Length: 210
Image (tube, rainbow, N blue to C red; front, side):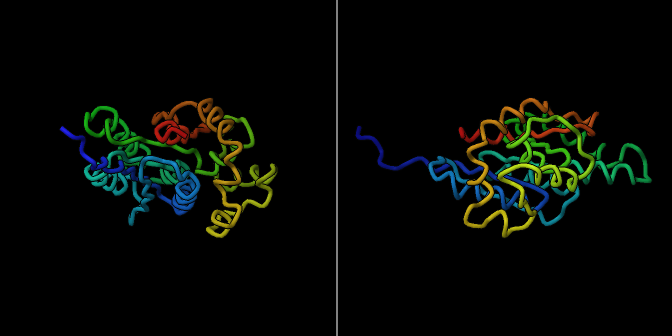
């Protein structure tokens, strides 16, 4: 029998981040990595609570081949410290519960990849130019460190900076292998120990084959 001329549909990967920075970065990744065999769909949830994000991730996992859930821990840590209710209902506790569910539920484990950045995506940006496992307790402190290093001395957390002619992804691509190695050295997310420098962004590039 002759082979079918129909091509298999491209796999679709959804990326859920709780901020616009993640969306801008992923849009530039998609723009520059033109040979990818999957379709990248950056998603920005309407609601930002951990429970709302998790529900959105579950919803997307039904219609996409893979969902990457990118969580900045600075807000979780800050809101947990300020929380006045029961200990088991803090943002950190809720995140820990959802994370453990991702590890134990067979379908979710197969479809969802959890990506932690502590304190924020900028820690991943910093790892392109510095090997560090230092914990920064705010994103502003990471940005101050980023600005000490070329080619990021003019770094600005704006759409214009991320998407200008020499966009953020294109600018950092020569340093990507260094960043992936540094990302690995930060270790893995630990729901029982949030206050440590972590970036699990290398998981994305391993999955995409970049």
